[in-house]
Length: 97
Image 1 (cartoon, rainbow, N blue to C red):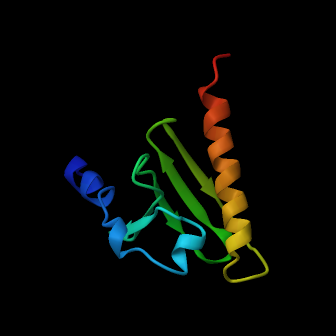
Image 2: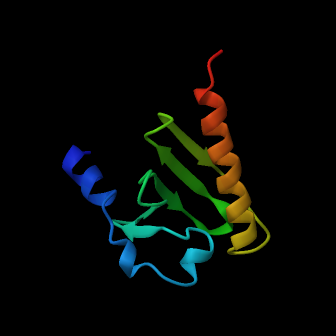
Image 3: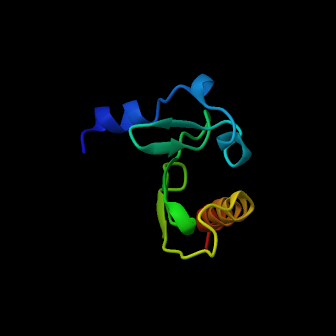
């Protein structure tokens, strides 16, 4: 994938992002089929129904893939909890030995 495409994808317009998506990503954006976590990290996510997730963090140099089959098509509370867990994994991986 060209670096220019990745940079363009990470540079979505946060002003166009609104409800109901801000429930899960309060400072999020969407571009080129990817969700942008926030303006600071610009982490990318591919999100699917029933809780599927691919999360890319440049700060923690990690990619998380979550296969899932939630009973609900979409569940914002579970998505928020999942993203919290993913962020905690990134912090834990960044800790020295």
